[in-house]
Amino acid sequence: MSGAATAGRSGPSARRAAPGRSRARSLYVLRPSAKHGRGAFAAVPIRRGTRVIEYTGERITHAEADARYDDEAMERHHTFLMIVNRRWVLDAAFGGNDARFINHSCEPNCEIVVARGRVFIEAIADIRPGEEITYDYAYEREDEDDAIATSRYPCRCGAVRCRGTILAPRDGPAPSGGG
Ligand SMILES: [Zn+2]
Image 1 (cartoon, rainbow, N blue to C red):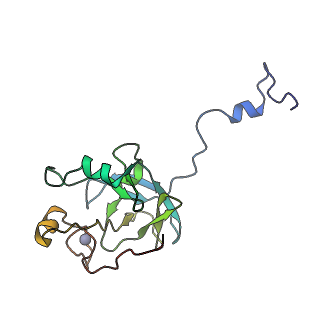
Image 2 (image 1 turned 45 degrees about the horizontal axis):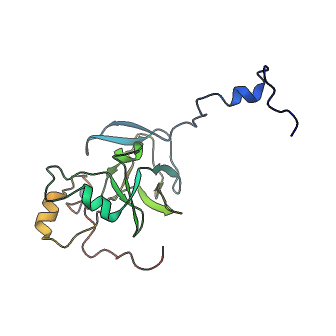
Image 3 (image 1 turned 120 degrees about the horizontal axis):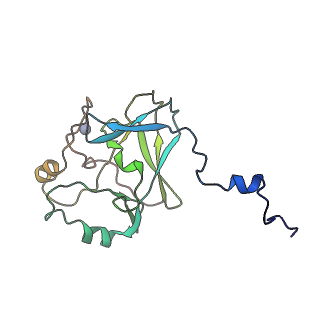
């Protein structure tokens, strides 16, 4: 160790440690969306395969999430839960970032990618500036009446093939095994 941290002298290294992490140009901007509330819109061309943003939030168990949000009791069926895996759920109501404003679409341009217990929203198509960034929420269905479930979680994404609900398709491929 040679005295790198010289007291009394403000060298370039001290300056570099200053606050304000260099924030690379943001890929998106938040603004009101025709779909729902605020949405995220591409600020620059985003290439397919780009990780647009990480979905952050408090890491809790499924049991804890169930305890926090009781469908039957809730007036508004809108939470910021993101399933990571069988064990963990992220609750973006606590420690969430901009990712929680990204809206659902039945014909999305992004998808969820889970890597090492972290969740990312990744482009599955080239996205033009000004286009709204979306992914398919595909909420887990619980065994309840389809009509009730659909009315509880309606979709108005405007896609030609809108399935009318943000719940996962009933006959969709079940996530099985690996992962
Ligand atoms: Zn839809």
